[in-house]
Image 1 (cartoon, rainbow, N blue to C red):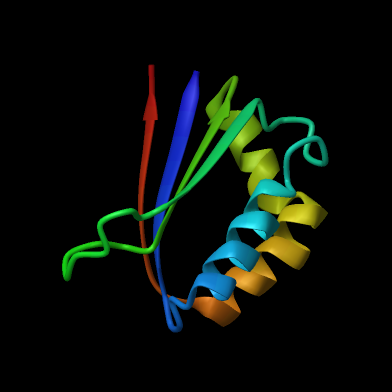
Image 2: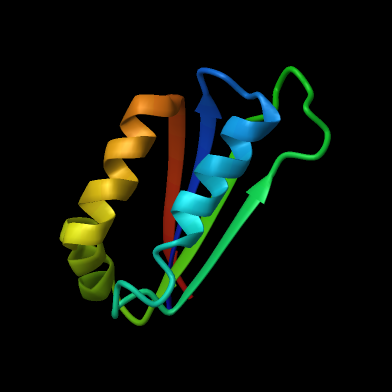
Length: 96
């Protein structure tokens, strides 16, 4: 199993922007064959150290993850939207 986690800080963390972004990220489910599982969480505590959203995706292999990265649906609308709304992002990838 290969897990890809991204934490996003948005330019505007208004509830409607968080909801829209969460929905766009979740819309990948069922559209990208290599994507085995997806979870998107909105930060509950909203501290100074917090990022706004967490994306957790799982794949069978690093090769499947690489296919996901270039999948047309991931590129547009998902990455297109994230590049427009995200101020910062941090990533961790691991195999288990």
